[in-house]
Each structure stands twice: as C-alpha cells, then as structure tokens.
Image (cartoon, rainbow, N blue to C red; front, side, top):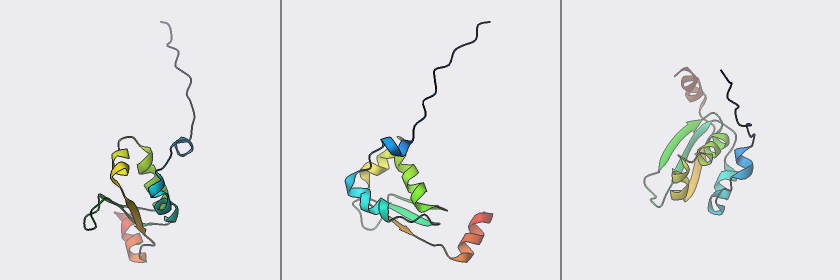
Length: 97
C-alpha cells in the first residue's frame, strides 16, 4: 500500500505573529511571571468576564489571547488585572489539589 505523504510541518511562534490590541498592552506588560490570580474585565466594574489562576500569570494570560476559541474574550476585555504572589499556604494547597 502506498504511504501518504504528509504536508511539511510549519513551525512558528504564535506570539510573533499575533498582534495584541493596543488598549490591552499596558495591562499585559504589567503582569508578572509569578503565581497568582488574574481577571479579564469588560465594561462592568462589578463582574469580571473571567477569573483564572496560574503559576506564571503573564504566560497564562498571553496563552488565552493566542487561541481563536478564547479570542472572543479578548474582544470584550477592556482591562486585565493580576495579583501575585499567592500566600505560601495557597501555593502549598494549590500544588496538591
């Protein structure tokens, strides 16, 4: 049986080709590479669009913004906030759970 030829695999870095919206750049640049909690905020001051936690806030938030499925959140976001570092007991419990 003839073997199928696969198309050449293109390697690229998503961050290199994705343009983050100007209105979010200051928020993205301020995020530390530390564990903590982050929030995507829309027009409402009371209810965030999304809340998440990560061992590396900056990396995780940027990963949300690179995927087409989650890009809708980006279009609705007006600001992004993050709080770090987590208290030592939170880090301990977080790694276990």
